[in-house]
Amino acid sequence: MDLTISVIVGFMILGALYAIHARDLLSSVIACSLVGYSLVICFLLLKAPDLAIVQIVVDTITLIIMVAVVLDSSREESFSKFDTQGYISALTAIFLGLMLLYFYTVSIQSLDVLGKSSLRMAKHYIEGAAQKTGSANLVTGVVFDFRGYDTMGEAVVLVTAVLGVLTILRIKGKK
Amino acid sequence: MIAYIMCFILFLVGLYGVITRRNLVKIAVSLSIMEISTFLFFALVGYIDGGVAPIVDPANPAKIYVDPLPQALVLTAIVIGLATTAMLMAVIIRLYRKYGTFDIREIKNLRG
Image (cartoon, rainbow over all chains, first blue to last red; front, top):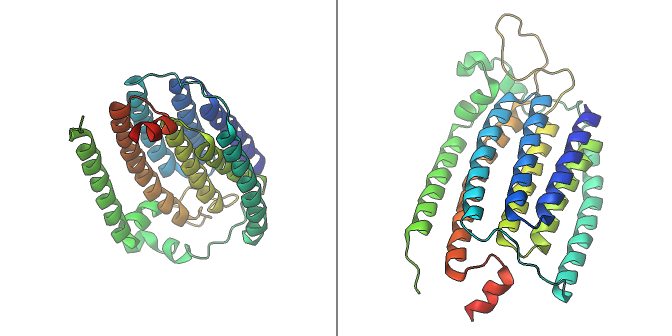
């Protein structure tokens, strides 16, 4: 399972690199959604069907929004020379990346090996969850019953975001 | 353990894009790539070998279940990520209508 996931994530990294470096913005956006659809396959392999369903819907909506924005504009990214500012930011990114990678490899030593994780937190959620919540799906039981207030907060965030998008798109800017 | 490292390399690719790109759409794309790698990390943490998806079958319940807690967390995070992306794209399209470009340096120059 470790190797399978690694191969798929390798393809996701290739897609992400293409999305970052493509000249045409439309192909960049489509490569980004390719990464998202590969994530759906990973979720299915990791036994998370709820996440796969949600991710495939959300990824399609994101693709539609981004394509709408890109098609409404000039698609070509204007060619820019690689000046000193560009070199500085690239060096900063690589240095920061190496440093973060080192600390990450140190910190995942305390995690369980992939596939051997112990159910420390979720034991109480799993035992008798069907009787406590009346839901056969344990993820739904956690989201809507044990952590119902969090889900309410999430709904508030969604409504706020929709109101924000409507407000931003409706106001008339000063000329 | 390779899967964890690969997942973090995907995150670093997104970080590289955010820092080095000048195009606003590409910055949004890089942010969404970083989000995706975080979702994958949480799904990896909850995985158990030989476990089944966390849906209880009353007929034969004595099985190992995959940890449902990270999955519930990611479920919330995916939807929030959609809201964030929609908001970001709305701001970007406003900026494009006002300045006529996606390039952040040109926008900075035009403002003065």
